[in-house]
Image (cartoon, rainbow, N blue to C red; front, top):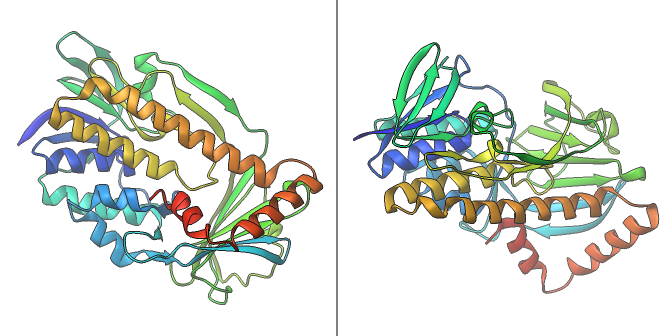
Length: 351
């Protein structure tokens, strides 16, 4: 059954919201200003709570069939490995890795099974909230909807139209990213972090059997990597800046924000996409139950918790002098050799 809900943005957050609404009998209108699906693999890691949200629709099974299961998180000071944490504790307690464009593909396929679709090339130009509806202009056409979900990213036009604050700060570093084909990379099933002098960091994340994502808090991730990596192909490389921000209000009476439109933070911890999926799942369930009034309180608190967690981890791993970082690395090595390792894995996996 069609609904009068408009979802703006067809990334993982918007697609999850649309899929769950459709599964619950409320097929929304979904628009995206892009001309077609993205081919970029921005977010990678998928944690168990996200898979739980996507399981009823069947999307989780399709994702699991294609994704890489991360065996361990391994931590290095330069070339020297000082700690490792087992992350594969069986189905339901695993960290999965899959390029974002493939995750979006499986969400779209599932959405179409429930009668939904994405209208690409449709740009939201204006939005005005009225007491009993929301007026929007899409590609010059005036339309009305009962509710609007803004899942249109950090530069959200929905958020701008709502006039809510997006408070926070910008990190000073220039970060870099590279997606590469490297068939000979060591222990390809493991997440690997390399920490060097002055907090220079490179994270290597499996994307497929021989494809990897590198993220660094330096301008050149490949050049910063302290161990050899034989790269056969570079799919994507570039730099980016990071903001740490959260909206002051996730909702008005008829307009709601989710995902990067509501919050953004560093990639440390890999929670950005997962937090957006959780926003979307929570919001769709509230449409079904009539509990929309509680959305802001629940998601603002969870967003704040994840942002604080990400920032604590980033500062501990990447900031401070050599002595401070050395003490922290030593503490990590001790903690990961103790029986509390499974508890630590549970915190990473959010289970």
